[in-house]
Every structure is written in C-alpha cells, then in structure tokens.
Image (cartoon, rainbow, N blue to C red; front, top):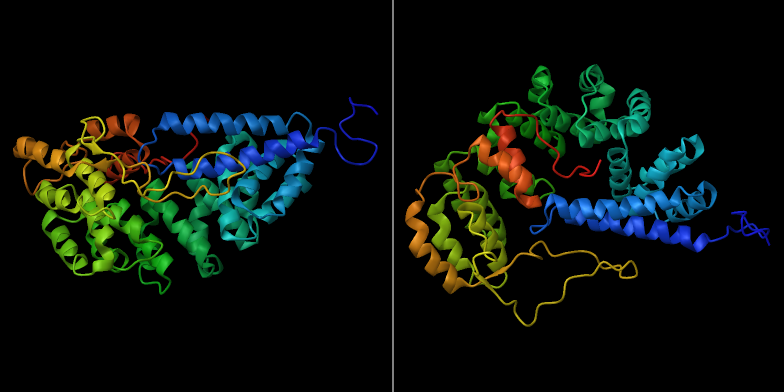
Amino acid sequence: MDLFNPKRASGSYAYHEFYERYVDEASFLWLLRSIAVDQPHNTAGDVAELEERIQAHLDGLMTSMEPGWAACEAALALEQPGEVFTAAVTALRSYEMPKIQMAVEAGLSNDRALQGLVSALGWLPAARVQPWVEKFLAGKDMRHKYLGVAACSVRREDPAEVLTNILSREDCRAFAPLHARALRLVGELRRQDLMPAVQAARSSDDPAIQFWAIWSAILLGDKAVVTGLQPFVFNPSPHQSRALHLAFRVLSVEQAREWISVLSKDPDQARTVIKATGILGDPHAVNWLIGKMADPALARLAGEAFTNITGIDLAQHQLAAPPPADQLPIPNDEVEDGDVGLDEDENLPWPDTRKVAALWRNHGQHFLVGRRYFLGKSITPDWLHHKLATGTQRQRHAAALELALLGEMPLINTRARITA
C-alpha cells in the first residue's frame, strides 16, 4: 500500500480521519465564534484567538485538496452553517467551479446555512472573493443577488451602481429578502444618494423591508423617523433588539422615558425595559436597576445596564457575587459536545446588590440626571473610538453605532473578521 498516495486503492483516502477532524474543528469553532462576537466578556483579542484556531484547521484542509474536499462534501449534507462555512472557504480557495457551486447551493438550502456561506464570503481576502461577488450581483437568480449584497454588507464594500439598480428594479424589490438587505446596506455605507429609495420603502407592508428602511433613514440622518420604530420596540420580533439599540440612542431622554413607561406596563417586557434603560444611559434609572438586581432572572442584565450607564465594571470593582448554587455550568468548547448555545446573560457577573448600592450612594452625585452617558462618560467621538478599540464586543457594537449616528463614519462591522 502506497502511503505517499493520498488515495488508497480501496477508493477511500489515506488519513481521511484527519481531514474529517479539520472539518469538524473548523465548523465547530466557527459556531463558537458566531456566539463569541456578541458575548459581554469577549474582547476583539479573544475573537482573534478563535479566528487563528479556525484558520489553522482551514489550512489543514488545503494540504491535500482531494481528501480535504471529500471531507467537506460529506459535511455539506448536514446543511449546517459551520459546515457550509468550512466547505465554502475551502471551495473558494480551490478556484474550482464545481466545488464552489456545490458549497453555494448548500448555503442557499436554508437560512441558517446561508449564515455560514455569507460568513465565508467575508472571511477570505478580496482578491479571492470579489470575482464571485460580482458574478452573484450580475446573476439573474435573486438568491444570488442577495448573496452578493450580503457579501458587500459584511465586507462593507460599496457595489456602487449595482445597488442603485437593485433598488430601482421592480423584480428585485419584489424579492423581499433582497430588497431588505439592499436597504440595510444603504444605511451601513451611508449612501445618501439612495435616500429616496429608502423613504419609499418605509410604506412597505413587509415588516423586514419597513424596518430596514427606517433603520437606514436614521443612519442617513433623518432621525425624525425614529417614531416609526415604535412597533418594533414594543413588540417581540426578529427586529426588536436592533430597534431598541437604535431608538434609545436617537430619542430625546423625555421621549425615551415615555416609551420605557409604556413598555414597563407589560410584565413580559421586563428584560426589554432593562435593556432600553442601559442603552439610553440616563443615570435617573440607576437606583431602579439596583432594585432589579435582587431578582435572579434579571440580576445580571440589570448589572450590565448599570455598567453601560456608569462605566463601573462589577468584577473589577469587586462588586460581583458568587453565582447561585443552582446555576448550570456553561457549555465547553469540545467538538463532541453539541450544546454550544448560551443564555443571553451567560458570562455576565452576578451583582452584589448591597455593594453596588453602597458604591452608587458615594459616586452617584457625579452623574447628572437627564443626560445620556455611555460607559460612564459623555458621548464624544474620542471616547467612542477608545471603546471601539478597547471595549468588549457588546461595547464595541454600541460604540460603532453611536459613532455612525454622530455622522463620524459609516457603520463599522464589529462582527467582521479581526485577523484578516
């Protein structure tokens, strides 16, 4: 038997288990990264370390393309986002059309798989991806056009007249996912020339199209349309979180308090109220937040909101309490363990309510009620740039959005690959 030939006489590949392991590891680590980019304790450096591990396994797959692709092809049958990501990166690096077509079709099989495919298009360098993005944008298949727009979105690359044409064509606007993603890209890139298309889409009956039209109009400077976000803020939906993060940065403090008052009448929106309070940044609500820290279901979220307003890190200031004894351990990073889903509050510290209250009694007088604060300071470009560079992932997301609303720059993609 020739061990130097990657393909055995039986038709199976030598060392195939190594390539399968590369696929499993890269796919699983991608899933961990997709969670890590939104975790409250992770910094850009933490995400970069995960990316280096992912890249090492992706490079392993390229050491011998035939067995590497055989492992990818088998994994594509799962139609899962991590496996699609791994296979798509490998296919694009191969420059082989059949492999790329297979990965793209698997990525278009369902919405979750699509996340992995779009991520792959954001992972690779422009020289490797750009020809395919252009092909997708020029194609007749609306799903391919969507893929091209989504790639431009994650890469923050302007498709110029192509985006204008998509928003002007009736057949493109009739494909709701494409229309919505194109509207989103307008705001991300601050394409002021496309404001008429954005304004026209605000009257759409499709909730996603309507939401992204309002969202982009605000990022383009039309903050008066923030009232259009009210239904998205008050009602649970896929857009509620983004609506919260935008609306409570744009509304006046008085308007924001009114919206929070309405939300607080619905007991099912208790978490939404706490999030809105932290985003708004008005120290008027700090004592109320401290009271919410006594509720185990809300304690960690209230602690995060407290930090978002005051800039006081609970762990650094010894204001954290031991977790309750009945808390389950967080999932590990073993490939064999399929449970990687995290509670939204996982990795947030448990506040020691007594210590937090005592500290606030001593330091609360330094904050002016009715003024917005972001992590303890007034909202200025210098402070936002500092937190964008040094903050945790959630803080970086918030800083990027605040900077975009100040008109400082287009909206930075703080979930993009860091080690590129």
